[in-house]
Amino acid sequence: MLQKQLEIIRNITDFEPEIAIVLGSGLGGFADKVDIVKTIDYSEIEGLKTSTAPGHKGRFIFGRTDDKNVVLMQGRLHLYEGYKPQEIAAPVRLMRLLGAKKLILTNAAGGINKSFNVGDFMLISDHISSFVPSPLIGANDDALGERFPDMSNAYDKELQAIIKKTAYSNDIPLKSGVYCQLSGPQFETPAEIRMLSALGADACGMSTAIEAIAAVHCGFKVCGISLITNLACGILDNPLSGEEVIETAAKVAPTFEKLIIETVKAI
Image 1 (cartoon, rainbow, N blue to C red):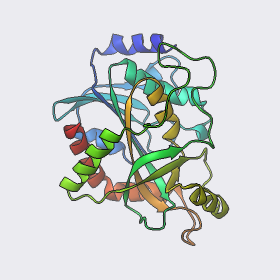
Image 2 (spheres, one colour):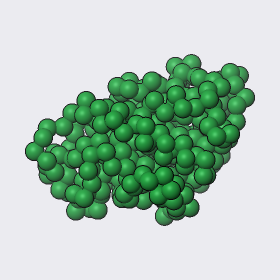
Image 3 (spheres, one colour):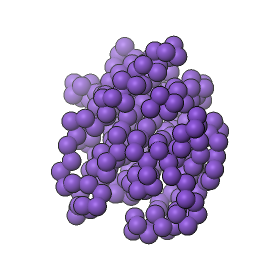
Image 4 (spheres, rainbow, N blue to C red):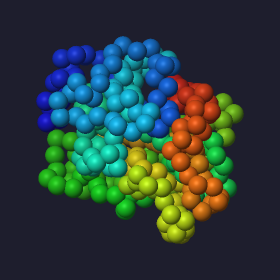
């Protein structure tokens, strides 16, 4: 199916990206900063699922920023939408087959680490994926990657160093920590957050780890940045809402966009 989907894209555009970027909740506006060459809705690609989450438009955007060819996922797929891990991984694998070698994952996350504040950026140093199914379950596609991929450098240390330097050079405060993916769509209970904290998670959300696993498997160098849009359940007494996530993301979007743009320049 991937090869057929690749052919569909290639019949629409011969654009070859160097860098792939997945835009998280509330961050879709980054696409406006790119000199767009072509846009392809997921629905135009046979067999590819489309985004149903609020703020996720569900399309690939091919374009240039600072003379770098990029492909954006303006909208990702989630387990809570009813999609299988393999379906969630498909757009990431397609971007790799299109030629992209480096992947920047972004997301909106709940802060577990009590030193974090709403609006902070967290460089993902590692992840916990134990609570969601792997996209590699089932027969392995040897053309994509090996059966048992090593995950010891899942979030590439060289790319992490570039992002840290970029943030410092642009006076953008940047935390670092471990991200945990859960399935959603419900937010976590206070007891679950206490458990995640004990396991070493600094932030949690409903995406990203599945994509990172698929990306490492198919040969991407991966990095990730979380925007802390709310403090996780039990950290404060306030109830959580999806609207809060979108609202916080909108407030800090210009800074996040600058961090991504400058990172692309430096890669």
